[in-house]
Image (cartoon, rainbow, N blue to C red; front, side, top):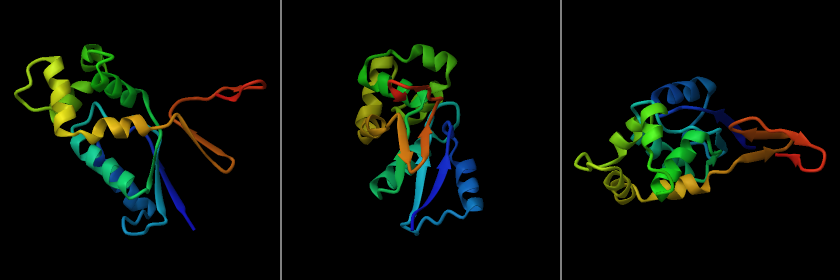
Length: 155
């Protein structure tokens, strides 16, 4: 029987997550222990690279359901070249993420973007596979609020 462990908004801080998971009884070796992340994996904290490794590992083990948060979307848009990232670096803590993931010699936003994609090519794949919501029985997991509409249902 699967047991689910739900967490959210770790914002580049893996250590508190690991402490919380241990207190909750999460067993890294128990294949029936499944993680549900409600988004905002990156930015603000100083363990973004460790967070990336953590989600990569559990994704490969098929033990992680990833919901997309707004900070994950900021990073995805930056890596795709849709957004230059400057506003998110200035106001949303993405500076810590790019400092950790990019080559230290990258001296422009384009070089930072290319450096991250080269050094961590799976990052974009992880961000792209994050979903807006996950339904488990009678529960809906999402990063932000959902609204119910009789015609559309939950959206």
